[in-house]
Image (cartoon, rainbow, N blue to C red):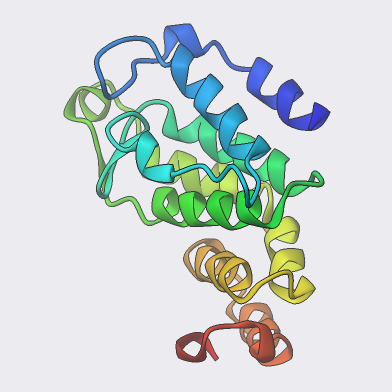
Length: 170
């Protein structure tokens, strides 16, 4: 989990405005809990609602959260943490808008999250092909379907990994 710590520590969470109205310092702690979660000690990603996103609306901590999730996926994390990370990543990449004040300041969190996720393109492909779990592979594939610019590659992976994907993605 050292790589996750490095990535979490890269950001000035206290300078990011959380959806709850205070600094996002507590979001960093929540992300550490998410990544450290196990089957016996699961993390409910709904705890992050209203902090990094409000359904389909991205908030300022969403972009660094994408990077932390990708760092976690590159590490040896529990299957439940992996599934939760990929579920959260899909929610972030599926974002349709952002807080008004961020839009007025010229930011585009949707594009920033997609750009950050593209930095982990091969991690996501690896997740699809690995067969760790159908949920993890399917969520990774859905993220790829939103960020991948090479439709042929995505389709070839769909065929190659069909046994690891939910039936509706095959």
